[in-house]
Length: 359
Image (cartoon, rainbow, N blue to C red; front, side, top):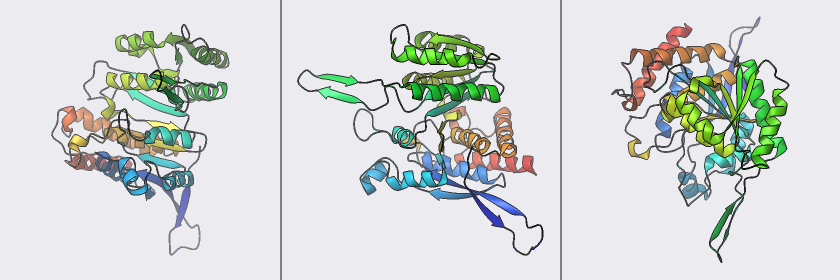
């Protein structure tokens, strides 16, 4: 684990000088509702009493193309390489045309191979199931998202290559098993399509089976992707940690989010050996941008993940408990959850409770 620190010394003392840690973090508000939910999240984080040195970059995606000619400027990448951690709001990606996804580019340039998506029941949120506790571990840099595409204009044929490597598969599989062991989970499921994709999915399955032998305390099984989708919407409580390839993980993580209230209330992280980006996984919702209506819960829960990554478990627990209180009471809820509370008011209520829990 890593975190860049700036040490601040209290003036006026010469003996037993205390110091304070200031976490230097790249802040990427994104577009659409991104700046609003990011502002709310920063407010809640600062209510923990921890000090943050935010390195803010406002232009990503279309705004960056207009200003710099590229959707993800190199100075943003350099900033994350310097701070090693980023907190990121949603960024609009054109569908079927236009520039390459900022998210995909970030993951590939920084080698953020582990996409980690907790999908856990939050008390007070209306959902089809109770007591869901899923962790989706998605390989984040290979597969059909490798960007290996071509188009044959003579025959109007488009090709995409699902490139999967042994090394890339092993590291996400290892990440999942180790996370399961260290965080108290007892089940690991590998999801594949090895009955059809015998070389790519077949290799991924075999590597997971080999790794499982080294974790005898964990229950290990495998599921074919289509069957896994059915299993999750019938009995999600039967599963804990799920590891899979890029495309399958993209689909399963959104499906799992739907089991616990939707993308607006689940966290997301992209983690590599050297860098980590914590983000809201929902869209930029331009239709409500600037109206102070957006629910910041997803980015706030991602910020909780960030705090745990930094080793600040006390602050993370306070943030989590305060959020549970808000939803359990059901008084200060945003419009998507059936309430009328604004983004700013939601942040105010949450920040107040976080402070109270830590004092």
